[in-house]
Length: 446
Image (tube, rainbow, N blue to C red; front, side, top):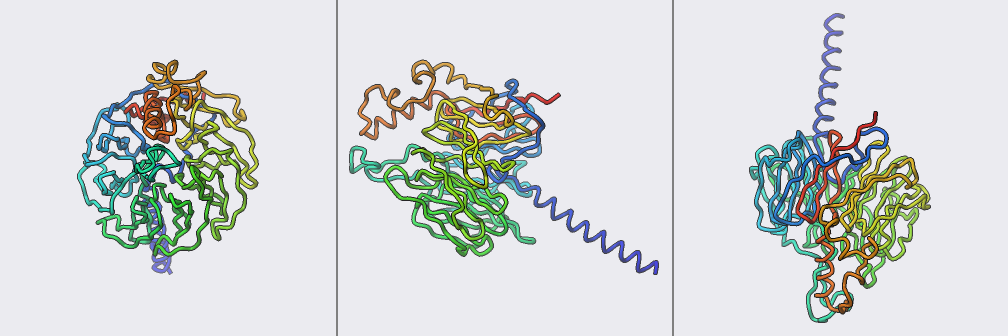
């Protein structure tokens, strides 16, 4: 009897150890878009600048933090590892293209892509390359004579195509897949250890959104305006949902969020959608008033929070019905995806403002931090402190593509923020097109 009891204890110990090992493995997966809810209590506004780290290019990607290191890519072609406390460089890795993807980490390996056409896996502690996977080429979404702009025979890159797809990690027993979209129209799943391809799914246009994994399903949308659900093990299609295709309002750039069996995502068409995650059936859609959704949503307490472009808003929608609860108006396009900690939501806009908002105030209590460049250039570029494309054009002919690009370059002078914030140890991190990675202390609840 004693031997049997001992065997029983050993059996339960092995089961517990196995479960613990599995949970620890899972918990090591970190991604900039998989979870936008962080630990925190009460309302924690931004308090003071802790440090800022300068790169030599614009930052469009979003930071992640693990084991005391902040990871982020820059348009200068480098991927950086920065000490979380001091802001000093730990290492950097050079690619041959701008880095507009964010990163994922699994088992001390960090994954990201570059406009040089490769997706990389590096040792997260040393920055040493483990493998690289070659796509058929990464590029901005482009059309000839886009939206009727001139010259009509010119191949024009979409000026609002800010991101490349970030890899996400799918675990299946002992194997792991890195799954990411590509400008070549494929969603790729490669072995996370060696980069060998396991499956790919072909669409008809670039995929620059970051896929989301839930219950062995991978959800993503592309520039073809279609939202897909695939089996994450095999890449076989489960269902797809088509958004509208019309001039200036085509494509899905935002990543999705899944909560309580509902998948939420925004498109350019211009609507925000809630679909049944299992079947793809439409539950509700919200009209975004001719405003694109590039921001990924965050769901908390039966409320969906998401940013809009031309209405400059952070929306709070009822998760079950899609009814608007309230909106908070910024000073420009809200493209960064919000982060929530405690009762505070954090997000930024294209005019260079970073906001914290008390979720219990229905949009009435907030705090704003501008970039230094915004403070410097706002009077010349903004119209009554608001982003205004026509005003900034200064009577230029906006039917010309080159003039539109000039306006965007003017906006970039403000230190536009399309990077999504990440929170670690009561510090919030985000990047800006001014080339800086910022770290701000958050006020702790007393």
